[in-house]
Length: 283
Image 1 (spheres, rainbow, N blue to C red):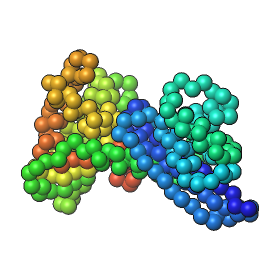
Image 2 (cartoon, rainbow, N blue to C red; image 1 turned 180 degrees about the horizontal axis):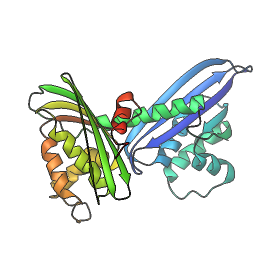
Image 3 (cartoon, rainbow, N blue to C red; image 1 turned 180 degrees about the vertical axis):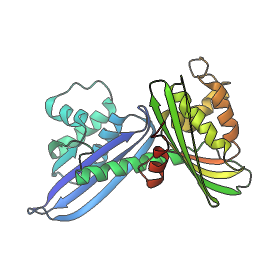
Image 4 (cartoon, one colour; image 1 turned 135 degrees about the horizontal axis):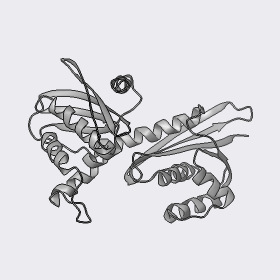
């Protein structure tokens, strides 16, 4: 008899913010040998972690075309405990309705697994969700410069806060070589530190550069991919009419960003991201 297991995970860069989900359907025989796998993923530009966790389960169950006995394995206590222990549903009612409809069609066993604990399929689902977030960021590039692109670069920006002292490290890789930058500021907030580091990176790019920027700041990522368009239209005011904080830095970053074609992504676990992080280890 074939056994069906659905492994799911959701992730969000900022909460709310750009998010992604991943799901893996696994069919195996009674001995546990894998017969077939199906990977699914997707993302949204403005969502929450809980919505992505729910979406992963919903999209996975939608692939089952007839009533099925399925084991759902998730690292979300929010999902598992709500379905098994009756946790109160305070939000996301649209998704809960979809999940309830699907659950009535199948015989589901719910299983919680601790995230980032080395579970093979949970780790793979997490990787799918994280990759989906990057795709969402890629679709929301801030700068699409109409001028001819003459250079290319990849930038990694790492940040470190210790009390009110902040330090940043930047690795810029171009076809001509590499440039590393690092510095620090006293009496600074994490958000302002991220903006200063971003400004430092942009000031060291050659004109008209197609650049992918990996940065360790949800504040900058959301600002450059989502918020800044509205701020600019409202003369650097938020939707509630209040002035944008740190607008002195945002305006300078916006001016420089318009000279390039930029893609903004969260700092990942690659070797070059690690190299950027090492620049801020020693203050």
